[in-house]
Image 1 (cartoon, one colour):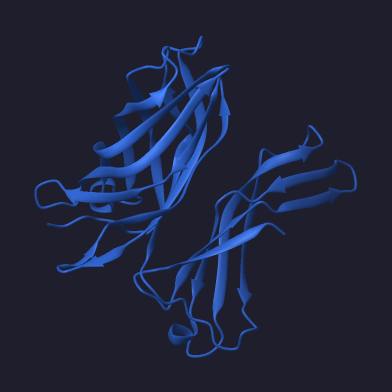
Image 2 (tube, rainbow, N blue to C red):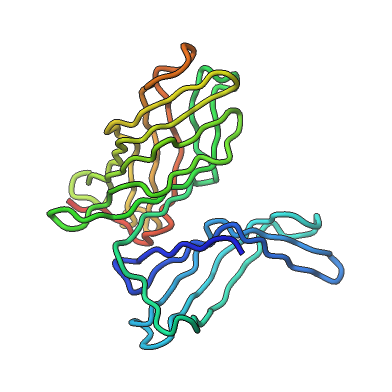
Length: 253
């Protein structure tokens, strides 16, 4: 069945459901069985306050191939609408959460101590929009930050820290600042720890600029905190994230 996480959309009552880890099987009389997996699959929830009654969940996404016959499609298109029969009244309240997934699946960590010169990882992160004196700011504690699985070496988030997006000029783009995070990077017996202390981690390109989904382009260096003498003094981090929720994300001054 996997797991589902509900994210408020602009404070509710609607939201986005992120579905991951479920294996869906399709059996064809001639082709055999094809299995697909949900991975950050989005389901849009329209809350009861908007419908005036039963909440509605709408799915429109592609599930990547997991296993099965070589004739199986690489992706399975899944569309449809579900009525939420229980609970009778369902709204999603609270502040919205930014949910971002690495574009094309991977983030790159440049490492001279690695014989391959880099560690390549799948990555996703979530952080809740918090309130300050001026209202909503696109920043706050990172609730989830993953580097998994990794290839050509190993890496992991030891402590996620916080993210803040500071507007560039009047917006809608901004600079992503990462603070309080710790990253472990290793290959073989070489283990290194790097610290994010208020570093300019990358650039958010807002929805008003892209004309759709906001993106975060990462190009930042984390200084070495501790580790093996062979560790690099800086861990260069590059790649891009797609902001899957909030659907329309812009930063204003």
